[in-house]
Length: 104
Image (cartoon, rainbow, N blue to C red; front, side):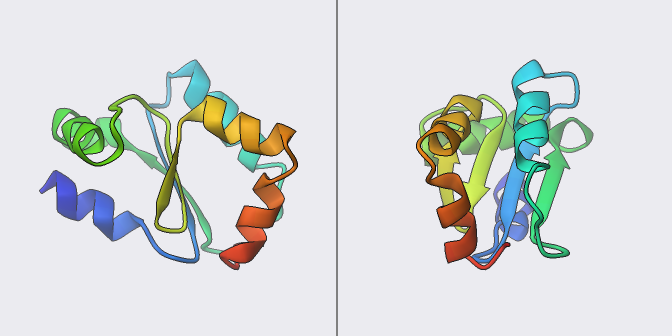
């Protein structure tokens, strides 16, 4: 169930960010990504507290090596969490990745 849920949210031309609303790092990821002008439907924030949270986080651990949130997928690739997202931004690579998948 968790696997199907996560996979249903990940698309090759979309950014999917799995979050918990009260998580500071999740809030920072939301703020960072909202600076960009995404095409309609190409950015989604998914609140895992309304789903099988433990199952989803176990699935993240199996597939990405970490179960923490946010889990940020750019296209079908999990780039990691907030610190990884912020590092891409600092290196000037985030907008390039977003353009590559057609999200901007």
